Amino acid sequence: MNWARFAAGITLLSIVALSGCARVEIDKSIDRINKDAADFTEGKLILAQNLDQRKALESMAAELLAKPLSQSDAVQLALVNSPALQAMLAANWSKLADAAQTGRITNPVFSFERLVLGDELELTRLLSFNLLDLLTLPQRYGLAQHRIEEAQLRLTIEVVDLISQIRLAWVNVLAAQQNRNYAEQVFEAAEVSSRLAREMQRVGNFSKLQRVRQQVFYSDAATHLARAEQETLSSREQLIRLLGLSASQAEELLLPKMLPTLPENPRTPQEISKAANQGRLDIKLAEAELQAAAKAQGLNQITSLTDIELGIRQEKRSTRNAGSSISGSGYDIGVQLPVFDWGDMLRAGMNADTLAAVNRLEATVSAAGSELRESYSEYRTAYDVSKHYRDEVLPLSRIISEENVLRYNGMLTGVFDLLAETREQIRTVMAAISAQKQFWLADAALHAAVIGHPKMLEQSL
Image (cartoon, rainbow, N blue to C red; front, side):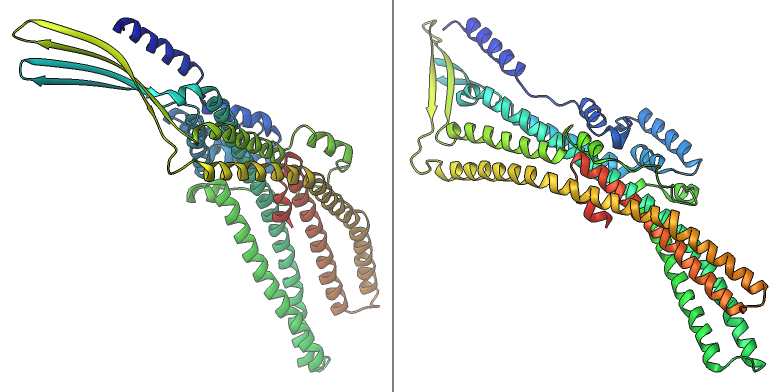
């Protein structure tokens, strides 16, 4: 065999093989996330890969921290500031690269041997490669593509999960702030009534029982205020962790004083159904897992039984004294003999993986509609309850309060009755805040359910 022709053939073979190799570009992967989860990232997800990009993200974070953070701003701050998010993107870049690597074939091995036997010099060149790898390259490439798709979807789901957690945390901290403010008002009213009760008992106008009742109200209000302050601190710190803020950034964090008002109209079932039909991530992931399992099973039917190594050899033997030489070429074939292991267990495992993937896809599709209906029902119920508090309960509470003030001014009721009614009105307002909070939690869960991440519903309740 002519060595030059052999080398040219191997080069051509290598070019053909490499042209079919699966590749991963993290920037394109992130662009796809920005497209598939546009309602979450608003197209602003980025992986900082150099110092200039990191400085640009730090500048964007400083601009966002200069004003009170809306829910959307909080998400954007996490996208540009969270080290945990950047670590997630980098780690998944590695997973994408591992998935692409499964589509590559083993590199050929070149061996050179020089042997001296007396007056004879023997030179041997051997180029060997896995022939079965080469023959199954199309199957390997297809498998790699499906595994890349699977890894891509998992990364998108993780990003959606983090953003959904930020939305929930933002709602929690604003609701906690409002509850704390009203808890302070309840405490102040209870403190006034307790102090007045002690004075009334001292001058003989109040019994001990009446004074103790006011003292109990005061003690309960103090306990509730302490819990509200702790809840505010805990929810704020949770948001700080999700945003990835440093100690100095946490001091700069500004938040709105109140939850957003209810939207004028709730989202309709038709709107939700249309958005969900554009493609749920959980169904896409189950489909990608099934396709990857099927491709792996098809490849395994071949590779589990045997393996083939092909080597192309060229030898040259020369005699120093005679000045003569002999050249020759040939090939080696190594076949793995299925004597002890016929690969039946490996094939059985692959069959089981494919069967499991089939059933997971069926289960995911079956559950998708139910999960979406549940999430929308929770959203709509929370909207109706919050709207009822806004339009019915709070106006009636204000009317009662105004009437009690008139009765007090007309000396038809006492100061303790007025203070008790004030405490009751504040409790009604806090119940309305809780209903408003549940709506915005349900809204965040519905967004996640539409894209195919229904477990956020459980986290929001």
